[in-house]
Length: 123
Image (cartoon, rainbow, N blue to C red; front, side):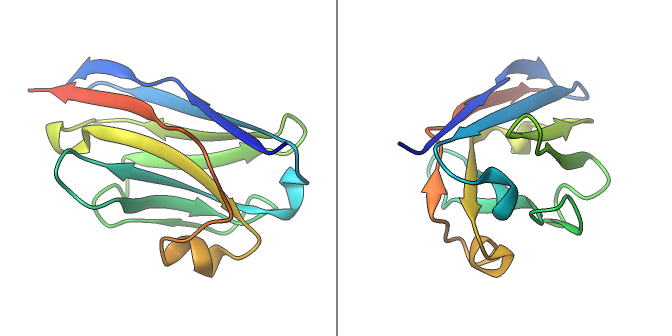
């Protein structure tokens, strides 16, 4: 049974930091590209960051470049998103997703999805 379980969300003030984690099981984690997505209330889901199966290259949405860092530990089947200098517009539910193709993730598609973790940034 495939599972992606996100954690690390919470409430922070603007300028603060959070580190999200996504633990994967039930499939060959090291063979899949991974991505982080987010969905704010009343808005469509958007891609935030993506990472190749081997840890590089990485890709970021313009809105988070220089503030967020995606990484993975294939030995621990875990994906991370370090979020610094958080802004109120970063508020939303954050999801991790997996797919053999980073291009499918980039297109908003993914074979496996987690249930999400809430991030709330107050001004």
